[in-house]
Each structure stands twice: as structure tokens, then as C-alpha cells.
Image 1 (cartoon, rainbow, N blue to C red):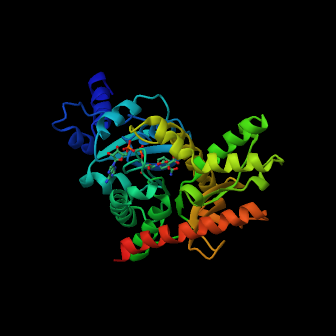
Image 2 (image 1 turned 90 degrees about the vertical axis):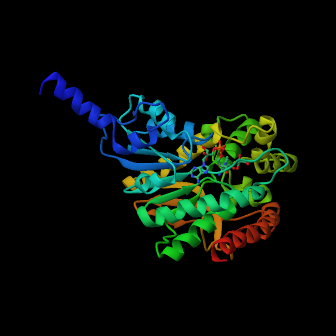
Image 3 (image 1 turned 120 degrees about the vertical axis):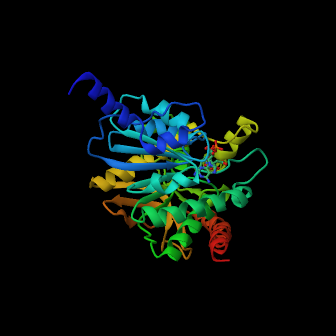
Length: 353
Ligand SMILES: NC(=O)C1=CN([C@@H]2O[C@H](COP(=O)(O)OP(=O)(O)OC[C@H]3O[C@@H](n4cnc5c(N)ncnc54)[C@H](O)[C@@H]3O)[C@@H](O)[C@H]2O)C=CC1
Ligand SMILES: O=C([O-])CC(=O)C(=O)O
């Protein structure tokens, strides 16, 4: 092969048709696809990849050796983010997809789909205030998943998670593709925060702390089980109240500090990658991968609930019960269930109506 042929071969890889289309009129040269690479691994799509969470999430997934192909989809700015990320010298092949016409191509063949698409909170808003915009976004994306990669594992980050997960489930049920083992609401940030705050109080290394956080992902539905912390810790009642309040309001703490410019993005990307990596290790067949997530559940009378789950080759292999709760946690559980019931029903009704 002479030099001209080699350059022609590389150019062909750099200009897949979808990138040409998405760069049309943008003034951007089509870039974003490596000529080679793609070690054996998993195919991952991020929907909402150009957003505050999506960008660092895309960067961290590009660094994950379990990922062979990374599809970055957004309704805006996907070409720029794709061009940028694709220059990282890690093995995953990166492709970008812009706008609804390219959604199906973005999803076809994916093993894992991560969804951080949708609007974030501003100070004074609850996560439920995002429902009107984000419910429709998650419904549309879920319809495309049901059509193009019905067997993929789906990680939903878009808020309100307590409603968006039931929305995705209803869409999949309608399409006849619902598999409760494959749909997970990402509550990992609650665990990450809980580990950090407990470590601060107990003067421990946060990497050694493991706090189960169950229930859901909004206010009182976020229920840290401080009686089950590893390593075993003995807290005063004052510490329990401080920690529970800080963990439940960690998102609001960031929203207020960002003062109208958004909510947690960097810690969320970190948490999303931690969870996605656990899903991929499960898919690979690693043993004993246990994380908390908001999933279809029989742990309580509610159809969805966050608790520890064991991840395996088919998604969720086992949903664990709550274990022994103390009186404070039992009271918290009742409050959490009351609010969760309404949020779940709101999501289900949105799709059924
Ligand atoms: N589960 C959790 O623990 C957390 C969830 N979140 C939620 O994640 C979501 C995203 O937050 P940010 O990244 O900060 O917001 P952002 O506004 O920075 O980014 C959202 C991205 O979604 C894209 N988007 C909008 N409609 C879309 C559609 N139909 N299809 C594909 N992409 C679409 C936008 O173009 C944008 O790039 C919010 O709903 C936020 O509340 C945020 C932090 C933690
Ligand atoms: O608080 C928000 O709106 C974003 C979020 O879910 C979190 O940071 O936990």
C-alpha cells in the first residue's frame, strides 16, 4: 500500500457518513473516528453527551478499557464534543450523532445506554419541577432504545429519577421489550456523597467507606442506612441527623452553590462512570458486583425502589432486601415510600394517558 492509499484509508475512517452529515454547515471538519482500535469490549452510548454531565462522562468512558465503541448523541454540540474526545489516545472508537434523525444509528448495537439528557435544576426548584420537560425527553429516547437496542442495559440519570425510570419501564412494556434486569436509575451519587460525608465525620478514607443508600433519588426518598455502614461505625443521634440531612440535600447544596448555572455535573459524571463500570464488569462476568440503584423491585410494596443489586451478565442478577433497620430508619422508610409512590404513579400515568 503506498502513501496515498494509506491516507485515503485513514480519511475514509475519519469521515463516516454520519459525521459528514452532522458537520454539514457547522464549519467543522468531520473528525471523531479512529482509524483503528476497538479492542474487544462493550459498545456504550451516551444520550445527552454534550451537557454538563455528558461531557465529563464521555471523557471518563473514553478512558475505560472495557469500552470499545463510544457513541455520543445530543441535540446540540455533539460534533465538537466528539472531535475533542476522539483525540484521546485510548482504544475506544468514538462516533458522534446529532439530533433526532441520527438517534437510531446512535443506538443500534449498543450494550449499555447512559442517559443524562434533560434540563437541570435552578435554586428553589425541586427535581419534580423538571418533570414537564424531562419526562418527554426520556420517553422519546426510551422509544428509540426499545426499537434499536432492546437488550441493552439502560442507566437513567435524567431527573426526576423517581419518575423517569417508571416512564422508561412503561415505554418498554408498551413496546414488549421490558426486562426489569436491564433498567436502572442511577442513584450512585447519593452513595458517593454518603461515603464522603461519613468519612469526614469519622476521619476515615472515603475509599474504605461503604454506605447503602436506598429508596429513591429526591429529598426524603434518599434514605442512607447508617446502621449498616462498613466499616461498622457508631454515630451519635446528632451525627445521624446531620449526615441524613446532608446526604438527602447534597444535590440542593450544589444547586445553590452553582447559583443558577446548573446542578452537580462533575461528581455526577464520576458517580455515573463508577456505576457504568460496575454494569460492564457484570456483563463481562465478574463476580460479586454489588451497587445501589433504583430498579423494579419487590423489596417493598412499591414497584420501584433503590436498594443494593448484584450485577451480572444479564444486568441485575439479584435485588437485595433492606436488612435490619433501626427505628430512625424505619420512620425514614415510611416517609420515603409515601413520596415515592406519588412520583412513580406520575411517571406511569404520563405514558399511559
Ligand atoms: N441521577 C442523578 O444523581 C443526577 C441527575 N442529574 C440530572 O441529569 C440531567 C442533566 O443534567 P446536566 O448535564 O447538568 O444538564 P445540561 O443542561 O448541562 O445537559 C443536558 C444535555 O441534554 C441535552 N438534551 C436535551 N434534550 C435532549 C434530547 N431530547 N436528546 C438528547 N439530548 C438532549 C442538552 O442538549 C444538553 O447537552 C438533569 O435532568 C439533572 O437533573 C444531575 C445530577 C445528578
Ligand atoms: O440536585 C439535582 O438537581 C441534581 C441531582 O439529582 C443531584 O445532584 O443529586
